Length: 121
Image 1: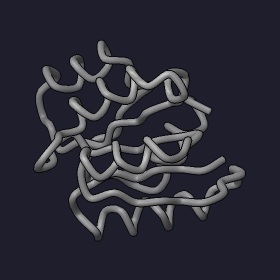
Image 2: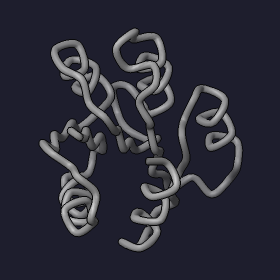
Image 3: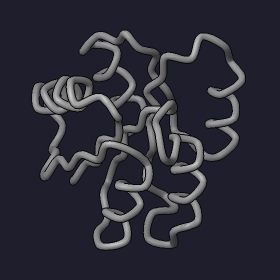
């Protein structure tokens, strides 16, 4: 299963990539995007089996990206896990209403990511 990681922090993208490689799950190609706009451009040319996305990003934030993903016919059933620094429930609840499969708060541990992936996949 191919994975798309969307976060404006290159460090977070690398950490998530390393965590995904440490799981026993059958991940294939792992692509990265620095914001929602870059992610949408990637999603127009290929499909992914899982998307991990930050909520707070420049250009197009994670909520806008999630809404666009849910409009794409080939991506409707794909799990999207939001990664967020949001302390309040407002944005998280909005993400769930838009169709997010789950969320993890930053700072996160490798175990938290693995646990969330096991629950969603």
